Every structure is written in C-alpha cells, then in structure tokens.
Image: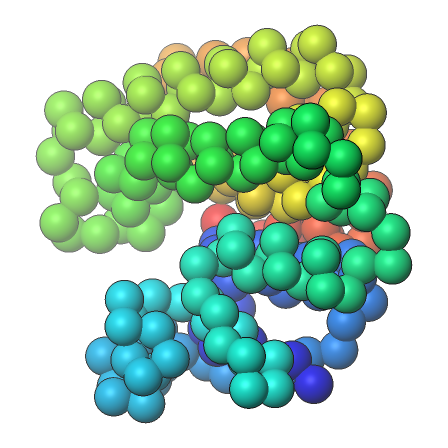
Length: 211
C-alpha cells in the first residue's frame, strides 16, 4: 500500500493523488502541512529534510518532490507508457512541460495566488500582486499558444503526466479571484480545462473546488 504524506489541499499533493487515480493505485494519505502535523517534526524531516509535502513511501522506498513522485509511479506501476512515454523524444517533451510548470509557471503565480486566493497578510502589496498577475498571464499565454498548436494536450495528442501538473495550475488560474481586466481571453486553455474535466480523476483532485 502506498503511503502519501501531505494535506489534500496542497497542489503538489494533488498531483500525486491524481496520478494514483489515473493508475488505479490504492493509497493511504496522512495529513501533514499547515493546519495539520508540522513538517518540521523530526519524524517528517527524517523523510524529507526540505520539510515540504508530498512525501511518498512505497514499502521501504521514500521519495519527495512531486514531479519525481509521479514519474516514479508511472514508471513503476503504469501498465503502458501512455502517461510517461518510454521513447526518448516523447518523454523529453513530457519532461519539458513538467519542468516548465514547476519552475516558470509556478514562480509567476505565487505572490498573486497567495494574496488573492489565500488572503495571506504578507502578500497584500498591490504592486507586487499586479506584477505577479502580469507574469502569470504571460506564461498562461505561452500555454495558450501551445494548446492552439496541439488542439489536445500539452505534450501532444495524448494525455500525459505533463497534463497532471499543468492541469492543476490551470485550475488555479481559473479559481483565483483576479481582476477581469488582468485575465486575458485564453480560448484554447478554456477548452483544455473542459477537456480535462471529462476525466473522473481530474474532477476528484483537480477541478474539485480547491485552488
């Protein structure tokens, strides 16, 4: 039985939960993080010295970093290579968008999301929110161009791990209360959002009312 450490509202924990659902993998989850057991607890730090969720335990194998975890799950338990292709060029395309989501896209929305969606007192500077929103819109524009080209999924014609990571960020884009004049029209992204909603696992762990 897989054991996942991290609260269910965490976007990175939800990557792992969604992947498990796509692979039909049973798991147990423990609440760790803000509002639950602190990740500075020595028992947690022994598993992940970065004090971040999620952490995966698969027997005596322990792994942290959400994108590494979902790659492992697809490689270890996937019955086909649909989620994470074995062919090097197709796999590299999936990795490219996984890394883009974890770095460029995530960095852009952090301040605006914390200020507007989470109402963090430390993230209420209007200029910083505006700058973060502009950056976020820029990277969502890059995604729009990509989806206009593929007319399907981020890595191409097929649903892959890249869509799990990017799809959660798309949910965050549409769920965060931004000023309407700061949210550019993104018709290909909107169509993609609805396309993902045809997947039961996305409705459970992505487009489920949680930003």
